[in-house]
Amino acid sequence: MLGWRLIDRLEAPPQRVIWSVAGLVHAVSDALSARFSACTVAGELSGFSRAASGHSYFTLKDADGESASLRCAMFKRAGSLLQFLPADGQQVQLRGRLAVYEPRGELQFIVESMQLSGEGALYEQFLLLKQRLERQGLFDSDRKRPITLWPRRVGVVTSLDAAALHDVVSTFARRVPHVELIIYASIVQGDQAPEALVAAMARAGLRREVDTLLICRGGGSMQDLWAFNDERVVRAVVASPIPVISGVGHETDVTLVDFAADLRAPTPTAAAELCARSTRDAEGDLTRAAVAMRRRMHQAIDTQAQRADRVAVKLLRPAEALRRQTAVLDRHAHRLSAAAQRVVTAARQDLQGCAAGLQRANMNSLQAAGRRLDRLGERLCGLDPEVVLRRGYAWLTDVEAQPLTSVRQLTVGQSVRAVLADGQIEAHVTGVVQRD
Image (cartoon, rainbow, N blue to C red; front, top):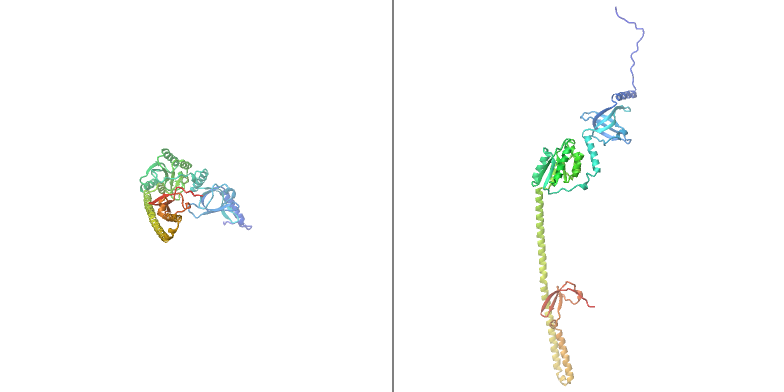
């Protein structure tokens, strides 16, 4: 028998649910909130921005290099609890919940807390410790001590197995082989490294056998170099009685020991070069100094030779001036003698012409004439310079043979020449008294 059934009415097909956009977005948001009400996600910050309201918006990219990204929003209250300043490229861990931004229907992560992960967290610790130690004055430049350029011994705090030690030893052997190196062995990486570094510096400070202390190690990650950011090591560097040079890592690596040291070098090799001037440089300085000294010595000798020549010329001038002055005196004496002779001749002629008249004159007139003649003869003789000089007078001139006739022409210490009857003298003025 064929199966059959009686259809006494039409059956309505099942009714489909038609969502509104807002209703569907809201339902998805509720489902996400229920499923991911509290979760943690890690990634890299990108496009970080802070609005005027204090809310922050950014994208979290996958740290494993995948192309996935997640829009994030961190409201002002959560942002005020941050212990660091977010920046693009930082690796972070976010704690929060998934939600849908309903006006645009976009998936977003509501951030309730953020912290750095990996080296980012270490770098944040680095900044906080640096800020605290800096406030305490441990990095002040005015407490830094000078490094001696000519040490006898240099101490090195590093690991015996480190490549940095080989670099330092080879640098010293090449540049300053006469400087003795003393190694204060210490581990430079790991949890025990800070304590070992402090102990090594303490040994160096207690023995006081080196002029400079070099603390160094090769490059590495921030975790590898973290012992040199330890507060105990930093304070040991500051307290060291021996000037400290730091040479930790590569040029781009910076540790707190670099700030505390008296001198910071970018690499262990550069630190070794800063410990002492090279022998070659010192020899070059000595050679240049010797050349300069020789040149200055020759210049001084030439200058003194020229001065001696000028003095010799000046010593010859007085004799020449004396000869000139003697010739002048001789001419004056000849002229005076000729004049006197002419006067005498004229007087004799007058006397001869008046002989007849004199004979007729009385004896008194003749005697008067004789006395007058005697006076004229005495006056004529008084005009002779040689006669004047024989009476104790002198002819005074300066070193240039200029006559001196007044005390106003003289000064104390001045050299003068005096011509006497039988020669001349050189004299110095020791006092000048002007007559009223």
